[in-house]
Each structure stands twice: as structure tokens, then as C-alpha cells.
Image (cartoon, rainbow, N blue to C red; front, side):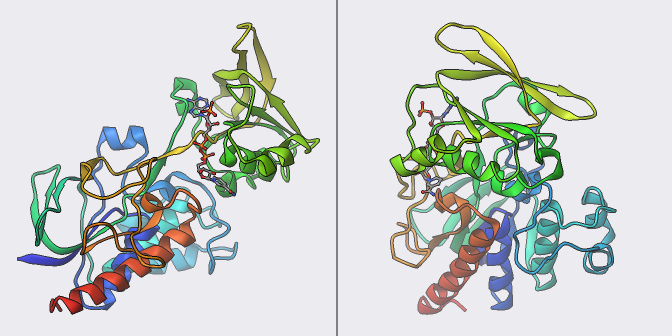
Length: 349
Ligand code: NAP
């Protein structure tokens, strides 16, 4: 049997695409990713980057409140037990992702917990092969494999992820642990400028740590940082170690002057990495047009078409700019509608 639409990826883009495709009676098949150690280590487990965050305060429709009753009624027991800190009243990234997944399943989406390792887009129907050896054919494909944040790669950084180490100020900056405390941001691009500026709303001081003596960021964003009295720039500086405590998480960062080699410990309750993202496109093996950073390029304005007809992209895998759950869900919806209309035009219903 040839699938009408296969969706690869299980973040907000993948599930939004699945919900729309399922409601259009396309019976989508989602490859949500495999539960492997490799995926765990590189932040590419099922349910995407949102599953790695804590509270989500900016997803429309979920004001802060006691969600326990709603979650109990919406999710099956196996999903509930997979959602951490069930007694916490707030909406969390993992909870939101389990809700989206369940919503997609409620409309008949089929889900396979496996990675797609190879695709052949050279002729239709397209061919896909999974890590477990499942071979699938599809009339259309929606790629929603997201991107992964780059981290420095220090063992101490890994240890305190979700305990003060983050790669998303918008997601995590407002958490109580960062309020009125010093924070460290690493990077010299627009993201680092944006994160450092944003974090001054909560932090007492922000140390912006950059490995060179000039920023890569746009002039206007860099100037905003340099003019901000709450930001101290540490030029020619690297992070040697994240200092922490089992109970408190991050308590400081050991910085190293890259010219003199002298180290300095600064107290901080968090470290935010803003050193770029890597889109998850390896499995495509160069078969789709990407930009110079590897993000899939849309070939039509305000559409989710890619360089191969019948293949659509949604979410962070095609977006190095907005990278929000709501924008990913939006493009997921668009991709499903684009796929449905394209399939209709091909006579596939
Ligand atoms: P980016 O422009 O690639 O900058 C990454 C920064 O991280 C660079 O300063 C780089 O240092 C540093 N870096 C990379 N690897 C590092 C490592 N291992 N150790 C220490 N530092 C490291 O990425 P971005 O800031 O995420 O921006 C991505 C794109 O999104 C850009 O096109 C940007 O303009 C856009 N963006 C726009 C806005 C906005 O306009 N509001 C906001 C965010 C992002 P070097 O400079 O030494 O290479």
C-alpha cells in the first residue's frame, strides 16, 4: 500500500500536520523518531525540542492554572505517566507535546516510534526506510524533523541541562530560578544579542561571553547590548566548566580568557547557549535544496513546497528565524493543507 502522506518528525509541526491531514481523511502515518541513546544525546528524541523544555507560558490557549483535571481527562494513563511532574499546575513542553500527539491519534493518525534513515525522492511514489528496517512508499511527504540547539559539548553542561543550562531564553528565561540572579549567555550572533537583552528583564546581571573581540550580530542588535547597563560583555572568553550543585543546579560558570589563559569563576544561576542550531536533515542526503546553513528552502512564497514536488516542509527544519512552537504548528497546518491540495490535483484522494 502506498501511503498518501507520511510525516517525519513529532514536534509541534509534525503533530499539527498530522491533525490536519487526519481530519482531511488522509490517514497520515507519522514516524515520530526512535528512542535511541544517540537521539537522547543529541536532543533529537520523539516529541522534539519542546519535550526538552520546562514551562510553556506563551502557547496560546493554555493560561497558567491547575491543568491536572484536564490532563487526566485528555491523556491516556501511559501518556500521563510519561509526563513529568504531574502535580505541577503549569503547562510544560512535554505535556503540550503529549496533548498534540493524542489529538493527532484521536483523528486516526498512525504513529511509528522509529527514525527515517533514508528517503528516495528521485521518483514517485517516494520511498522511505526506517532504522528498524520498515520500508514505506508515499505519494507525499511532510518533513518536520526540526533542529537541534548547538551546545558547547562540556560534560558539566550536559549534567545541568534543565537545571540552569538552556538554549532558549524565550522558553526558560522567566523561570523563578533566574529571577534577580546573574546569568551567562554564550555567543556573538543575533540570537545571543536577543537572548542577553531579553534576559535582562529577569536577571540582576547578564554576562555575555564571546570567543572573539567583535560580534557577528547585526549592528543594531549589538549596539542594544553594548548600551544595556545590565549586560557585561566578556570578549575573547570561553566557558571552561559549568559549576553546579546536585540540589541547586547551576551556581556559576568558570570562564577562561582565551588570550591569557586565566580563568575566573562567576556566580550565575543559569547559562544560555546561543551558538546556533543545526537542522535535522542528514537523512535527506542532499536531495532537497537547503540554504547555506542546511535549512530546507521553501520554493514558493507563503507555501511549504520544497524543491521536490510532493515533498513539503514544516517547522524549524525550514526556519532558522522564528523557531517558536506556535510558528512550527502554523507551518505544520500549512504543510498538511498544501499536501492535501497537491494530492487532490494528482488525483490521489
Ligand atoms: P549565528 O549567527 O551562527 O551565530 C552563532 C554565534 O555563536 C557566533 O557568534 C559564533 O561565534 C558563536 N559560536 C558558534 N559556535 C561556538 C562555539 N563552539 N563556542 C563559542 N561560540 C560559538 O547564529 P544565531 O545567532 O543563532 O543566528 C542565526 C540566524 O538567525 C542569523 O542569520 C541571525 O541573523 C538570525 N537571527 C535574527 C534575529 C533577529 O533579527 N531578531 C534573532 C536571532 C537570530 P563566531 O562569531 O566567533 O563565529
